[in-house]
Image (cartoon, rainbow, N blue to C red; front, side):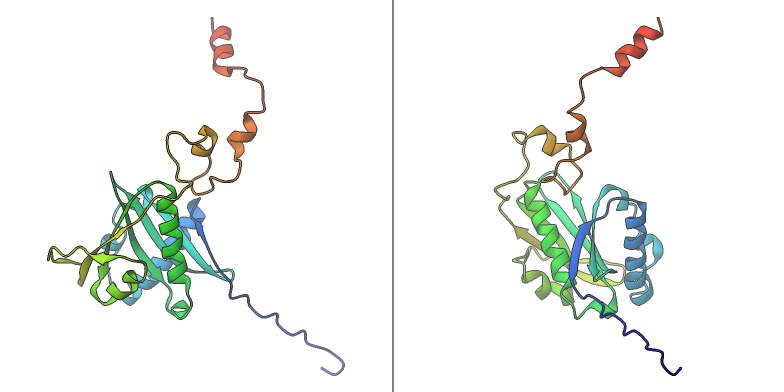
Length: 206
């Protein structure tokens, strides 16, 4: 192909970003990542990996450039949050996406005002969780499931200075989960005059 210049491919960005899952498409990414890691690599049965808790949890997705590389799940109990299901695709395990996912979840839990994060770490990953300050619970309770041995871990934290409480701005409380610092659609709706549409419907039905 004389005289034809082939454009060079642009280098792929390796920037790591993390965000909360917000819609069914995001949950499909989570399912794909965990299927690749737990079902394919660790031979975990489907019903054990997808345990019925995914619709009652917050999910974080980590990206390397534009590629979904890892995910993590957080569930909430009375006085603690449980961080779990950290999964990173094998080709991204030399990146820091796992650290970014965990740090994002810790910051999120602090913002929600919790003081304790509980986890069950595969024994080989105890040192990874210790990096964030988590410590074994130390009561010698053996945890095994899905063919792995686990160590119970506890991370004690202080809520952030901007933790959301009953004294927070009510518009902050109704903003999209994890996006509390940016006005949402309900903030904008407050600019409309109060019309009480249901009252008008009630009058019309008389």
